[in-house]
Amino acid sequence: MKVLVTGASGFLGSHIVDASQRAGDKVRVLVRRESDLRYLRTVPGIEFAYGDLRDTASLRAAVDGIEAVHHSAARVTDQGTRAQFRDENVEGTRRLMTAARRAGARRFVFISSPSALMGIRDGDRLGIDESEPYPRRFLNLYSETKAAAERLVLASDRPDFTTVALRPRAVWGPRDHSGFMPRLLAQMMTGSLPDLSGGRQVHASLCHCDNAAAASVRAARAEGIGGRAYFIADPEPVEVWSTLAELALRFGAVPPTKQVPLGLLRAAAFTTDMLWKLPPLARRSSPPLSRYSLALLTRSTTYDTFAARRDLVAPEIDHETGMTRLTEWIDSIGGINEYIRRVKA
Image 1 (cartoon, rainbow, N blue to C red):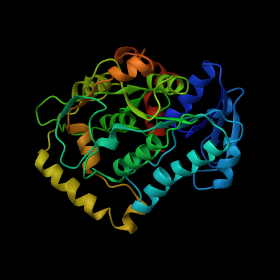
Image 2: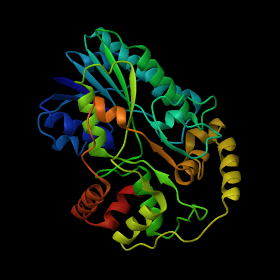
Image 3: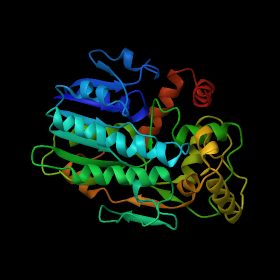
């Protein structure tokens, strides 16, 4: 197939490029000229299309002759106004999907997120499946706009234009410099990450980058999946705080031990969320603490991936294999200090 990958200069997008090539696909990437393209320029045979989701002309050029689109690009930080999130995550998806359909593409794979189902008042949720409804009130702008984009994509499914949404949970692995795991590891290496568990276990589904990429490549081919969303995750959930302790010990850091009252943190997160709704703050930086980031570390959330294993592909990379590969990659780039330097850059 001839495929387009958006967000290819980012973490998951670059792994979708690799997986597509392994499947024999001819790959074109939509990237900004100012993006970090060092890794992509080492990948033989890929074609570069320069532009972004706000530039309709560049989208038309990018999808010309394309059979399937892997749409991985998104605004994923806590930084930004409602208008910015909506323009990039919702309207950008609409523009790309419209251009792809008009150009004759037959498949649109949208990289969504379980965050599209995160509500303000959610507690622990274990083993939920795709029947879980969208919340009435979303936890943050990222959750809200990913849900809106997902709904748009799934409603656009047609016999001649198959659309599908994948929801990989907490993607991790080599080449990640800005996701949840490198940020937490950087904090642990400096001893600045407190234990937010409240003395209880916090269980979570994670998704290794290779498992997410393999599901995306399969979704570009599988039959009978149009108009559906799928949770994508590793074979088994993990306990968050013991996993962080394991990660710390692998690299000589001290596991988090200092406990902070959860009620105090929730109050602080609520306050910063309210302040960061002000456009001058929202445009300039991410909040130091948010209800969204706090929820990821304090709520147990696991997913039933039966549907993805049935219709797409079973995950091949288990947690231990993934941790070994992550450790080997960190060693290959110069060790933990170089890794932390890249995270903070």
